[in-house]
Length: 216
Ligand code: HCB
Image (cartoon, rainbow, N blue to C red; front, side, top):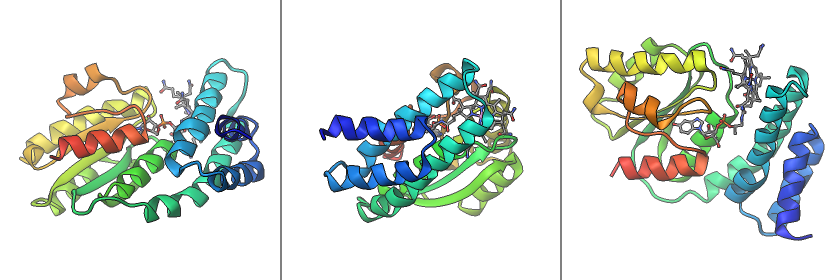
């Protein structure tokens, strides 16, 4: 089977909510020499994008999405330790990662956290549904380190909280102590500019590249 066919198999396992098949296809891709990042970006994430589009078109419903999310998790259980082993760089900084308050979508957040960790960042993962008070508190606690805030929001409602994050950091006199990268489907360049954050990124590999760049 060609590499593209193996990536398509990963994509289809996500789309078809095939949890066991997704784990098996992930192992098959690795055995064929496909890297963990390529498996995520070229196969699994492509599948999640299709799932998202079908949900938006009301062709599938929440139970199906949850099964696709489980298939994704099964693949990530295999890939995460490999990404940790492939870790490059040290001491590039500390990344505080989280999903904004009101939002429990954690697939992209976990991919981004994993990829930043694999690129040498020390990760403080606050998890999902995180209120701004906790975020600001964590920045204050880690003040003095090379620090980047990496927030995800998948909903237009939770995305609004990102604006308050920046405002609260300013009010507490902490804005200049931390770089801020926000991402997730609704986050755009114009939003980043409007709220005074530093950057956004399209996907997990891009997030690692952008984070390294703005931490220079
Ligand atoms: Co959910 N959901 N959902 N959902 N969901 C979305 C997000 C909608 C857009 C679907 C839609 O209606 N069109 C929608 C939000 C609409 C809006 O805000 N306008 C929505 C809704 C409404 C809801 C519920 C309210 C549904 C309900 O209960 N009625 C509910 C919300 C619960 C809550 O959060 N309070 C809900 C629930 C669910 C689940 C549980 C079924 C499931 C989540 C499972 C989980 O995460 N453990 C789910 C899913 C999977 C989705 C879709 C289909 C896919 C999201 C996903 O995982 N994408 C999504 C549709 C969509 O996004 N188009 C839909 C794949 C990952 C890999 O991509 O974008 O998350 P990503 O992350 C990328 C990228 O953005 C970037 O890198 C990542 C990796 O490549 N990135 C960053 C992410 N964070 C970054 C941070 C940075 O600094 C930089 C880059």
